[in-house]
Amino acid sequence: MTDLSAQTIVITGASDGIGAAASRQLATSGARLILVGRSSQKTKAVADSIGAEYHIADYTRLDDVRRLASELQSSCERIDVLANNAGGMFSGPITTADGFEKTFQVNHLASFLLTFLLKDLLVSSHASVINTSSIAARMYGNLDIDDLNTWHGFTANRAYGNAKLANILFTKGLHERFHESGLSAVAFHPGVVATNFAANSDNYMQQIYHSVLRRFLSTPDQGGARLRHFIAGQPGETWQSGEYYISPRRIGRTNPMASDSNIIREHWQRSCAMLGIEW
Image: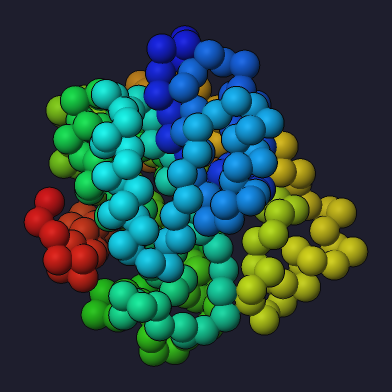
C-alpha cells in the first residue's frame, strides 16, 4: 500500500455510508482528508470525529459543484486522490434545476464536472480518480446514447444502471485521455451494502435496503474497506488504471457497452456538451 502521509485525499459522498466508513478507516493514515457531503450536520460530524476538513455540496445543483471546485483549488496545492463516491437511486424521472434527470446528474454529471474543473490540479499531482460504480451497470444498464438522462422508459433501476455504467465509461475515458500524463482512474463495485441507499426510491430496492432483509447485506465498514483499498492502493500494482473491479482484487465483467470504444468516446462528448465544456 502507498504511504499516504503526504497525500491529499478528497472523498465525496462522505457524510454517510461507505464514504464515511472509508474516511474513518483512513483517519490514522496521516493523509490530509477532505470530506464532501450534502448534509452539513452529518458531514461536519464525520469530519470532526476524525479531525478532517470538509465541504458541503448538493449534487442536484451544479453551481454547488462549481463552488466546491473553486474552494478545493484555493485550499489545495495538490490532490493525490479524488474519490467520486457520491450517488444514489431515486424515483423519477425528476428534473433538476440544471435541467437534467436527477439520477444521471447526481451519479455522473456532477462528478464528471468536478473532475473536469480540477483536471489541471489532478494531472499535475499524478492523481488517482476512484469512481464508485455498481454491479447495477451490468444488471440494469440499457443505455440509449440519444437519451443519456433516461427520460424515456424510465425506471429507477434502469436510470441507476445507466448512471453506474456512465461511471465506468467515464473511468475508461479518463484512462484513454490522461493516463500517459500520469493520471490513473478506476471504477469499482462496493458490494451490496446496508446504507441509506435507495431511501428515496419507490421500487423493490427500497424494500431490500430498508427492511429486515438489511441484515443480509454487507456492512458500511465492509463497503468502506473496498473504497479504502483503491484509495490507498498503488496504480499499476494494487489496481490497473482504466478497469472496473467487482471486488478489490478482481477485474469484473460489466455491461458490454463499456467495452465499445465508440460508445466510451460518444458518451464523453455528449456529457461535455450537456455541461457546456470542452475537455
